[in-house]
Amino acid sequence: MSDLSLKSSDSNAGFSRIILLIGAVLCLTSVALGAFGAHALEALLRANNRLSTYELANQYQFYHALGLLALGAVALNQPRSWVTLPVVLCLVVGVLIFCGSLYTLALTDASWLGAITPVGGVLLLAGWTMLLINFWRTDQRISS
Image 1: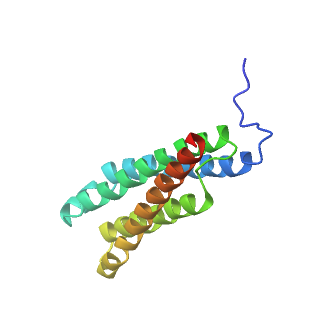
Image 2: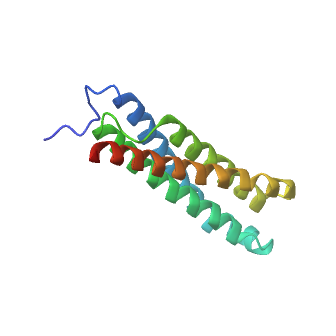
């Protein structure tokens, strides 16, 4: 049987493992929160007309968790990757603020959180933009 553990002599292995761990935790909690919302909270969310807000938070959390898993896998296999700490921080903090504020908005009357949600969205955009720029710069250096 092959060893599927994340062993690597690369100094990036620890960073990659952290990204993969965060991605896995976000996937796990997304599935759990999705099931909880669909079963235990559905009546409450429908009664308050907030089901779509909850579902949006859940979808964005899951999509970005999958993205982090992909980035962790790339970083694990490429020692000098374009996956950098600022990219990962923007994505993780963006998910926590964007999705966290939407979950909270869906479950409470804390409407002031609506002003915080875009901050998370901007962080998500910044993370993906930095990744794109890093990838483009790396590609340009390799091509030269």
